[in-house]
Length: 170
View 1 (tube, one colour):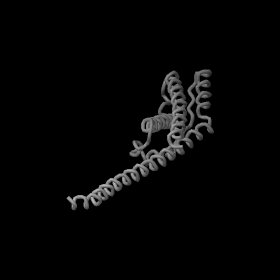
View 2 (cartoon, helix red, strand yellow; view 1 turned 180 degrees about the vertical axis):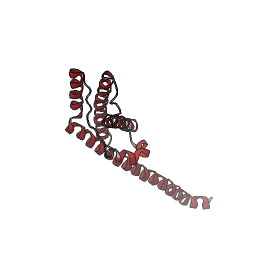
View 3 (cartoon, rainbow, N blue to C red; view 1 turned 90 degrees about the vertical axis):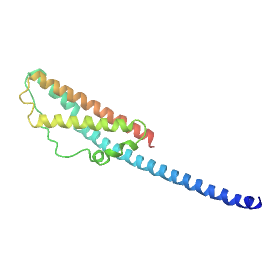
């Protein structure tokens, strides 16, 4: 019995060391994941902010409206000479496999934003390459109106992502 009492501090000390090691490992891993998620969220925020600024500074939504009004007034097609020569989604392409680390609704919102962006870029390339040149004017007008609608929706979604990042990762 005396030997059991003598071993009690050793056993308790060993258990405390095991629990302490486990808890500190979990805490360190959680902190590492939180830091990685925060850095990822801020990188997406930076890229999306730059894209939104670019769209706003160039006045793309207003330009689409002007083209739509011009085509409606003249009943003549008009093709804006779009050429996309650069990749504007390098942060997303490099980190798409890590989107699940993000908190809140960001794992859903971020891929949705980039899907809309890729759709816009594809349609703009089609316009620039003349793929729509033989379409009926009413079809061409619908395409431009859809593009304008998706552009506005994409920039609004970008703003929603920026606000969500600011809320979740202050």
